[in-house]
Each structure stands twice: as C-alpha cells, then as structure tokens.
Image (cartoon, rainbow, N blue to C red):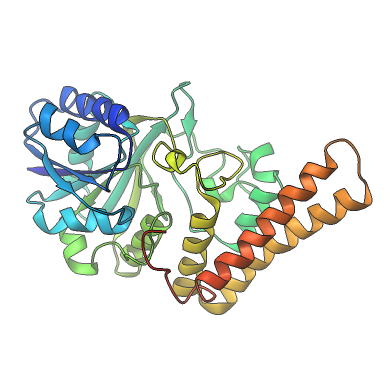
Length: 324
C-alpha cells in the first residue's frame, strides 16, 4: 500500500481535477488518499466529503501551513511510501507505478521527485542543488534565466540536464514527491517552523545528512498549474513569477539559512538580496528613463519586506505564530 497526502487551501475545482487524475491514472495501485484542508472558504472540504467518500479528510479550523498539515497525515499513513501531491498537480499515466518501482529498486533513496510539466507542455525545473548566496545572485541578475543550459550559470538547476534519466540531486520540489516512510521514522517529519516554502529543502538536507539519497526520476510526471493556493492570498505581494508570496518566502528562507548554514549563511543570502535591490533603486534614481519610477517603488517595497521578514524571524531564529 501507498499513502497519498494532498494539502488544500481554497482550490476546490482544481483539487477535484487533481483527485480525478490521481484515481484515473493509478488504477490497480493499492493506496489510501488523505486530503488535509487548511480551513478553505470555498467548499473544498465539503466537495471532498461528498464527491470522494473514499478519501480520508482532515478538515482544519485554521490554516496550519504546508508542513504542519502534511505532518497531521503522516502518523495515520499506513503505506511504506507516502506521495506528497499538490492540489494543482495532475498525475499522468503510470507515474505512481513508476515511482514505486524506482523506490523498490533503490533502497538508499529516501525521497524522489518526478518531472513537473507546465500546462503549456514545457518542463519546469524539477531537480535542484541546495540554495546559496551565489545561486541567489545568479537568479536575481537574470544570468540563470538567460543561460538555462549553462552548467556554470545555472548550476542550481543542473543546467543542461535533459530530464531523460534518473539523477541524484540535493532536493526536489514538494509539488510531487514520494517519500520512504522508513526515512521519516528515522529523521522526523517536516519542521513546522516552515509555514510554507523551504520545508522540503530542509527535509532533503536532513535526509542527506543522515545518509539517504535524493533523486529525480523522469518517468513520473505531473502537469502543474503552479501557485494555485498562494494566489488566493489577495492581501500579499508575489515574486516576479507570481507563484510565491514574497514575505512568506523570505521568512522561510531566513529560517532555512539560519538553521542549516548559521548566521553567516543567513547574512550572505539576505545581504545579496538587499544589495541587489538597493542597486536597482540607485540605478533608476540616477538614470530615470522609461519606467524608472515604478522600478524604484518596486525595489523599495521588496527592501521593506526583506527588513520586515528579518525582524519577524529575529534573523532566522524564530518562526512567527501561525497563520502567517
């Protein structure tokens, strides 16, 4: 048996499509499915209860975040493997079966992730190295985006990797992953200080430190809409891809760096981002061409959020009370 855990927040129709695809493309697989609903206000929990009676529903009365919601289901899961699936990720044929096959044949693998495909049919980054101040600079400067095939400039996402064979990596996105229950029993579940973002990166870091391996595999695929739950937060600003809530990403990032790389790691990452946006502000102040005014305002807004998130987390040593 395998266990599938889906955490939902205000994604009723998308969640329905997710569950339909999961059941359609996993026929013959013995599995149990958990939906942990984080106090949705769009009828998501009722939809699951009425339309998918076999699904084990955990309906929270507040939004606990991604890490804590998954952790609610982990102790109840009876499978040897636990599949984490975002509600905006639609399983493709044979993906579940291929995940199980790979895990069965690779006993040192504690966690693996599949190929993430956009609705337009392009492959999204599905294999990554652990983040660093250098990888942040390469992303902010646009060098990573301009040279996605470069092994040097896009080393963070294994630039040039064709996604056609299994690859041992540092971490994989939590969009669609399969986790060995034995590994969770050994190293523990998600760190609930991460309300959202970086919880999977931290889990993979702990797994590798404990001697487990992390893999990307190419023959397990999902179609991923991206940011479906986050986009329901109309009160927050988002990154330039409109997928992550900026202040939440920053908080979790500082928590991750402080925990795994100490004060020096935190200051290097936060410092790169602060300096980058300070430089953008200065450039558009000294050379006020075109859309310079809006660019200055955007830079100031991000700088304020960096400072606020550092204060909120006491420089990465404290997780603000939930819900964020």
